[in-house]
Amino acid sequence: MSTLAEFAEDLARRSDAQLARLLVRRPDAMSPPVANLADLATRLTSAHSISLALESLNLPALQTLARWPFPPGHECLPTLHELALVIAAPSSADDADPRRCMPVTAVTLALGEAFALESGAFESQPPAPQLMSVSRVLRDNAAGSAIESLLRHVNVLMEHVYISPIDSLRGGRIGVRTVRKLSKDLGVEESGLSFYLELAAEARLIHFHPAEQQWWAADHSWPHRDRAEQWLRLVGAWLHCTHCPGGNPLDGMRAIAPVHIRSVALSAVLALAGKDHVAPAPESVVDLLRWRHPLHIDFLAQHVPEILHEMEILGITGAGSPSAPGRALVAELDGAASATRPGVTVGTLATSAPATTTALAALLPAPIKHFVVQGDLTAVAPGFLSPEVSSSLRRMAEPEGHGAAGIFRFSQNSLEAAMTSGMRAHSIREFLNTHSSTTVPQSLDYLITAAAIRIEATGPLLPQAPRPEARKRHKPGPGVVHSRPAGPTEAEIAAQITRLRSQPTWGARDTGESGPALVMEELRQAVRTGSAIWLRAVTGQGEVERVLVRPVSLAAGMLRARTVLGDRERRFSIHRIMATETTEQDQEGAPHG
Image 1 (cartoon, one colour):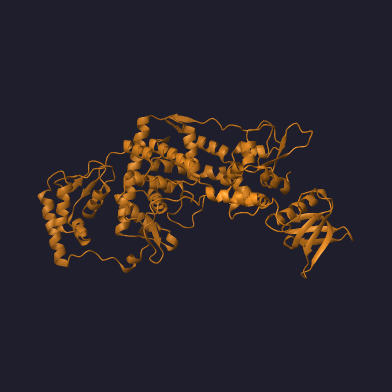
Image 2 (cartoon, one colour; image 1 turned 90 degrees about the vertical axis):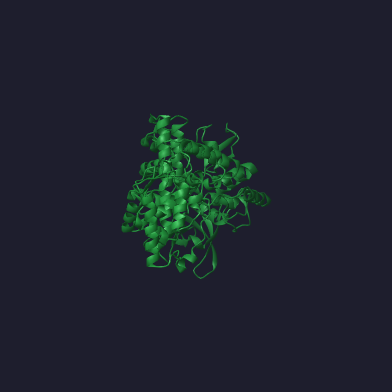
């Protein structure tokens, strides 16, 4: 197995470009920046850093790590070396291969026997998928209908929140009664309402006000945004959502997913579908995820069905096949990320995603600003009504039905409610005359007059004043959706590499992060070989002693050893051991604790 000294030497032999790629792929290693290459090696071998690196590996890479000595020329070795999970050390003179690879010791300890191979079990390729052909028409119709329904329901939810904030329990969790009432008012199933509420919160359209124990609107410009921008923002919120699917809506105690579950599931669906109009079977998605993310497959397999259903609701897929907007969005995200830095979000493309916008326009009918007012006191919108017109119409008429062609019914109660909220009879008539493609029926005109008389008789017509607390509302959230904190910038990486090159590989003895790591390494080595080692440790009285011992075990922060002189057992707390020194002559230039 490799030693920390060999690992540091491997890092020192890398070019600046290789170090930069390493720091991009393992950004935790320079947070905060390290002083020298030995400290970088120590940081890279920490349990947390190794765990993060192993999570990015597919099944063949993990199986390769578990089968050392490695077969020559294995295709996974360059990637594993780039990630600093294996090192390439100078070989002995009689070795035919000019360099020999070995796994980093911390990697071997972390893997254990989890991916030990049986004979002939190496999986170099993912399993063959099960694919179902889907016609372009079926896919586009399903995706377009889903996107239209998504935007309509979110807009209706926001109109509701603008007028009446959503009551919640402590911490933002919404109670069962509130969910049922909202579900009935908005005309959606409770499960669908939970999804829309969570999506609105993730997209920062609503925010929780602790003092009022309510959810308030956070973006009052939402109804006036273009539909493509709305869809991009909602999908961006979904992609970067860290909560596990399901559960009570807006519950702050919901479990956090160990991976970007939605991003990895979408990537798997796109990889399986390729450029064809096909829908991969859920089992095939799970099989590919098992090959790509074996360390998280139990969690992923549990939530794949829910994630695939959410893709259908969002219109990312239609009838199980990736939609044109879904493909265009991912392509533009990938292009932006490769052209700039990792961590590019959907929000940054909200106004610069031409391919996605074009794909959406092809699926969605153009918004209309007119409706038909009928003699039965209903207004019928023969298509997707623009958000501005729809919002005003909903203030004066009750919506009926929940299809793409909206139906709104006027009544004296609905008109009185509109006037109570600040609208006047003449503004209602002006709105109807402007947007109705037919003449306003006399019966509706009489109803408007009756509502105005009733309001005037009951008191002065004044807009409802906002509550004092409303003036203290938080500022609207930003118009972009942020991902988890991005990795270091190019300038930060360049500064870190410059610092590493300007310092010796090893710092002063007993200083820096590498000192304690060297002590632990030499102690483990002494336990394995049964060899004697000098310890410099602090006694209970605060004095420093130097004693020659033969370590027996190292566990739970305690070293158990027998003294060479006197042959008696002693126990040392690891935090009291300042340094170690082998009894053999050190090689020239090789550091020790």
